[in-house]
Image (tube, rainbow, N blue to C red; front, side):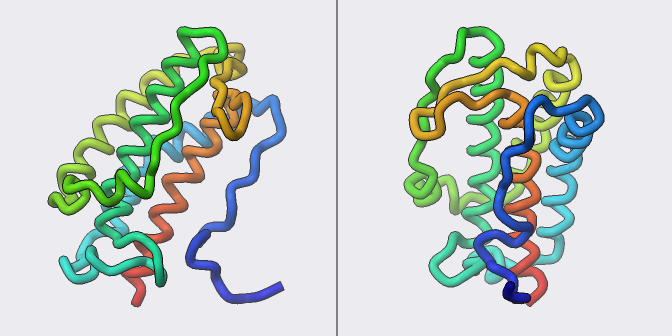
Length: 174
């Protein structure tokens, strides 16, 4: 096994948790989502515009693109949760993340996306903390992944926030 870090996965690849997730694990994931915006801001603190416009790895997105990607992704996740809670295993629409990362708003000041992320996560956590265990068993259908229970989605997005915070730290540690 190599000791070198794979910059695509600075915290390792996502592994689907065994279901059902117990209350303590679910609470940890929700806490991770709650803390993510402040951890993300902390990782970005002190980066120059040149560093923000630096790819975190060869061929990868710039830090600025990553910053704008995270609220895009998490807004989609929040909507997917609400769809799963209000419909019977709805089929969600994937989106072209790579093409979204090229849109003009990804060159905007990062504060816009950091503020959006903070408010979004406060609202998302408010919803998550109010859900019952049976509600976390509800699912949405992803056209490529099949049924995704909300417990699995919760674990995925707790990981996702740390994953991209890790990308920022790769540039910040250079």
